[in-house]
Structures are given as C-alpha cells and as structure tokens.
Length: 461
Image (tube, one colour):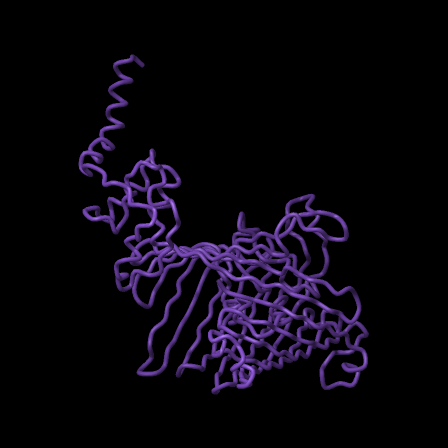
C-alpha cells in the first residue's frame, strides 16, 4: 500500500475522535484534591442506586479532562457507551465511566473447630466478593467470587496443592416486564431455599445442613439461562418463580458425597440433554413463605436421568423463626462413566438409585438488657439467637452405609449488628457405618456418636 493510501486510512480512523474533541470544547480545570465530589454535594437521584467513588479515577490519564459518563452535562447516555467502547480508550477510563453504576461488597467466615477425635484448628473458611453493576434501567449484572480456605496454594498434609477460587454466581439480567426477567450465566440452581440463601452472615449455625451439601450440593451452580420474576395474587399474596435450562449433573454420583462431585462443567456439557430446574414459592403475608422446586436431566450419554423434588418453608412468629426443607432424588441405575477415554473419572462405580434428606430448625432471638446497656451505643440494638436443628441424609436409599447420617445441633449466637455475628455451635452425629439406620430417637445415637464444637465469626461488608 502506498504512503498516500496510508495517510488517507489514518485520517479516516481519526476523524470521529477529532470531531468528538471539537464537540466537547475546552476541558475544565481539574478540581482540587480536597474539593467535594459532585456525588457528595448533590442529592442522589431517586432510583439511581448505590455509588462507588474511587480516588484518582475521576481523571485516570491525568489530563485534566473528566471521563464522560451519564451524569456529565451535555453527554447523552448512548454517547457514554460509545466513548467507553472506543478502541483508543484505556481500561482505566472504561472503569471510571461505570463507577457510578457499580457496587462492590461481600462476606467472610472464619472458624475454630474442636472435634471429639482429631486436632483442633482454625479454618479460614471462605472469603466472597460480590460485584453488582446497573448497566441500564433494565439490564444489570451480578457476580460472586469465592476464595475457599484462602484460595491457592492450599496446604494439605504438608503438601502444597491447588486451592479453590470459584465463580459461584455470575449472571446478566434483562428485565422484559415487571414480572419477567431473562437471566443467563452461572446460575444458582433453585432446588430449595437454602442453596439460594446460603450466605454465612444470614445463617444462625456455622455448618450448612448435611443434606444440603450432598443431595443438594450447596453451593450448587450451573451454566445456563432462563427466566425469573414474581407478581401479586390479590392484596396480600405474592408468587415468585425461577425456571432455567442448565448443563446439568454428570455421572460422578457417589454414596456419601451425593451429587457434590457431579456438578456440571462450565466449559462443555457431557451430553446433548439440557437439565430443567425451577422453583415456585408463595407468601401469603410477610414472614411466611413456602416453596416447591425440582430438577430433571440426563447424567450420562445413554440418557440415564436424575430427577429430584424439594419442599421448603420459612415462618417467622415474632422472635421465633421456624424453617425446614426436605428433598428426594430419583436416579436411573447406572455407573460412573461417560467421560473421555482415559479419564480417571471413569471408575465404573455403581450410581445410587435414590437419595433423601431433610432438616428442621428453630431460631429464637432474645436480649439480656443489663448486658446490652453496658455495650457501645451502636451495639445496643443487637440480640442473641438460640438455635436447634435436627437433620438426616441418606445418599443411597438401597443400603445402610456410612453415607446415612443423623445430626443434632445446638447453637448460641451474638449479633451486635445485622451484618456481623459470632456463632457457637455443638453437634452430635451418628452414621450408619455399623449397619443400623441412625436416628436421634434410637439408643445407639447417644452411645456411639461423634461430636464437634465450632466457633465462627461471619460478617457482611
């Protein structure tokens, strides 16, 4: 190509940027470091949502020219997005253009464990980051990233290995109507209420229900798409729903672990069948909710299926909360197979044909007034919570095995502020390793059980 053609092409590429600079006019001087930001001095517009101001990003290139955004006078919202996508725009400039739309937060949980048999230990259980961005009036995105046991590297038995950093939730929502929203991405599977509301600061006990880490493998997340929404039924009743198509479970379904190792891949489905999952809940008044949910999908190349149904309820009666769930899974007979040839996942172990689990929990909130009067002012609206939970799981309904577990947990928590809680719990547990079905009402539960004390601190930020 001749030099003349090079110059002509360059002028065509730079023409839109030159015209934009002429339209903007002379850039205003950069405000002093101690000058209040516009978001601090003006009243936030209604419905605008939370803001996130980061020092130095008002002018990331140091040119004295603020990056245009939707609040810049004379710049339309469509122009803001055009600016953000220009090939000459730096990453810092693109970030600055969306800071007023994005919120960062998260939660963390740190434990101390004292088991009947074994070593007491501190455990950096999880650190989770939330990112939410309001892209437009009808489009938003939300992400949850978890660092479990401090991420990588993770030291086990003196050996450094890979830890867990998981994208547990990452969706983009398009609101079509007030009662219909399209969602796509890494989705929390809506089987039961606990998987949808598993965040540690919102829970009163340090450990998740045993059936809802195995039969429902909380946190259960799958790649897929679908719809969610809700609408009023008359004056008081409210109906909410979620329904999705997802990649679904694979064949690594095991007694003891349940479906935990069978959660689907975010890279590629192991078969052409897409699993369907959904939950419908009704609330006749504030403080009472009942839900019914289900899942069905093929787990191998031969079309063998997993189907499950779950019922959940939450009822608040003044200072008392009653909550519980029950799940039943039906599995076509098969084997752990169907992975690429040579994969160590093809063990040919028998897949259990059924699983069950349930829990029932009561939480009672109370205050000891002399204690709270002695605390700092900001803590005086806090409370204690006493909890009791009984639960069972059975990850192979055909046989009594070590995967059959019954557990009774007592807990006492102190919550000085809603986002911060100090938890104490003590549980007794019995398995079916001796061939007898474990239940709390049988004598061997108290004679042959194991126990564990857990202290935990969880906080939302």
